[in-house]
Image 1: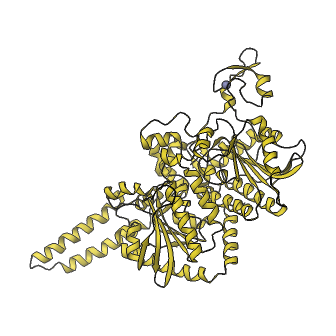
Image 2: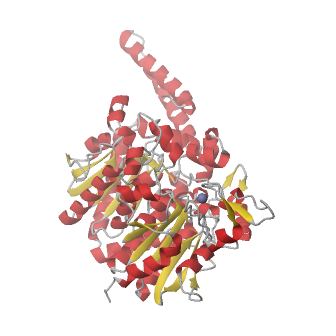
Image 3: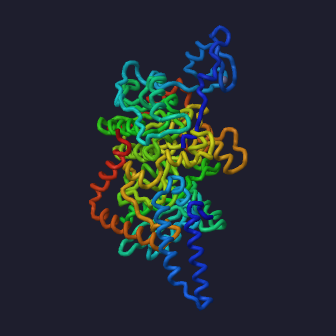
Length: 279
Length: 313
Ligand SMILES: [Zn+2]
């Protein structure tokens, strides 16, 4: 299910275009001052393309400064299957990814404050094995749901994922059921759950918690899908509409509540939470 | 389709059939020769089927002569009233359901509906369901909850259908919704993988209180071909991927994914539909008897704990 192999946005941007102060938008190819790209939260000022950001960058955008209390930081992937492919062992891949990203899993979880209101949070990071849903990822998302239930908090999950993590086999597929078990507990307790779908959200992640928000919020242009475009094209042998599987397409079909620009995301989430009058 | 590793068995079986026709036609009696060959055949089956590679198990799980849902309906259940449609869009014949009786038990039976030939398979989309199939399944689960009857889920699919229309109507949402609501469904849920347990399309009707697998069925996060084409960059490495994915029932039992393996006859379900059905029936009745005794609160707590444990460090 983790069919998605997205090219890292960063690698597409030629680093030393003209004295290293320019960068290029991967969508419209416009040349942008690096400083402007960063200041604009990695959103293209010309075409509104929303580039990938790290979980810590996302955290800074969403919560009040200094309000993050991390939960379960030590959970890491485990190679239960002793999985080896052509390029080597999953175990080595885990080690490399941890040292490359400085993260222990494809998601960071914890508490934070949005406009001074405490919430539980899970923020995925695509750099960590394509944001794939492994046992550690599922455990963190599930446990954070339980923490939200215990402390009576709204839960916000920001997804960025190619889907289930193949190298963990069925343990990975079962995380779909496990995370939805957590979401069901929130539902039972009438606690708000907001799902933020960013580029990309697909496979086993879109087919579990990411689609289950009371409110599903997406970033402009985000790829949101169940099956991969290529697989579909092979199955039906016809060309797909250009905006197929984009946030805009899903909104049109009725699966997304609202699309919002990155810079307005926190404000929107705060406003939605203000409507919850249940004590 | 004949499996290549099955060839030595097939050869002996053919010889036996030959002698049996000769027996009828001529005056010579081959009874003793037949007996010897039958014994050898059994030995051959035993030796081959006790040493299968995961890739060979995949071939058996996909065998065209393997029993499908319709076989199980007639061999296991005393009655079946099919209920159609998701009340929103359509009736999906790839995933069907209805009211069934199993000895003294009344149940809701839901399952992927592979065909036995090309015509049936086209009508039923090879058992690959669309959102309307998963939504019908959920509607029937809710009805089972209302009627206070357990739900049996027979899983046999390559996966949820990866088509444009399925995507447009929310394949992801349909599966996610089922998983979330199954977690709280107030009746016992039994899932049985009979053939192929293909990824999201399988678990979309698979989050039960009890998960069972037939001994030569498979359950996997991705097809071996799909995994090979991504991680090996070539689908021809499917046998390697099948090995790495640990998708067979004994491996999954060890990993704690399954509760129990339902034994197939020696030589696979395709050799003996009746015996396979009998084994399934016995197992289902036993689990129904047990689950029906559990008070609702405890049942939900057990289900919660079962999924909370999945892959826990
Ligand atoms: Zn641009």
